[in-house]
Length: 200
Ligand code: G3P
Image 1 (cartoon, rainbow, N blue to C red):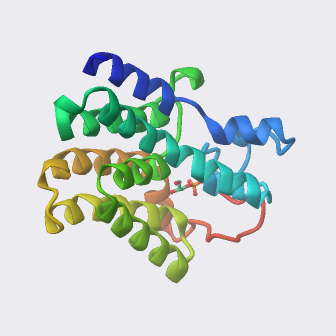
Image 2: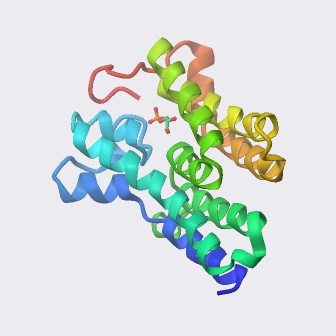
């Protein structure tokens, strides 16, 4: 399998909008008409269906991880760069999915999944920063952004410099996808986890 095919496969895999599909399939409504309108696990949680939110988080994460593992399996000779590219393709697929007219998610779960598959210590730092921030401040978007920014720093600090530039680029995409959240954070109107159903 060539790196081109892997990139396409990673993108198509990342494009699967599990949050939209699960909420629709299990009668939780149209996710894009709920809360922030985002297709990720945080917004699924706003439907009140915790099990669907957990499933969305795991499946969105798995998209990034599987893309990396496919690269490792099919083009091991291309090494770490191919794994990074395949994982990045999945995250870009999640954020800009062809099935949803390129209006997708914010990339946090998929980035966490690919980081764990690239090098689990990086993923562990990402998860710790994300969860720590969310537990402390109860703001999901802030946690996701903090975790994403921590990933390239962890790559450098923990001896995986080969992934630093790629992860930094993906962190920039995460920040860009959160620009509305950033505006709400600045205005002090970003909802906290556990806020009432329907909040943005
Ligand atoms: O992972 C998405 C999260 O960081 C923000 O989601 O729905 O609060 O905009 P949302």
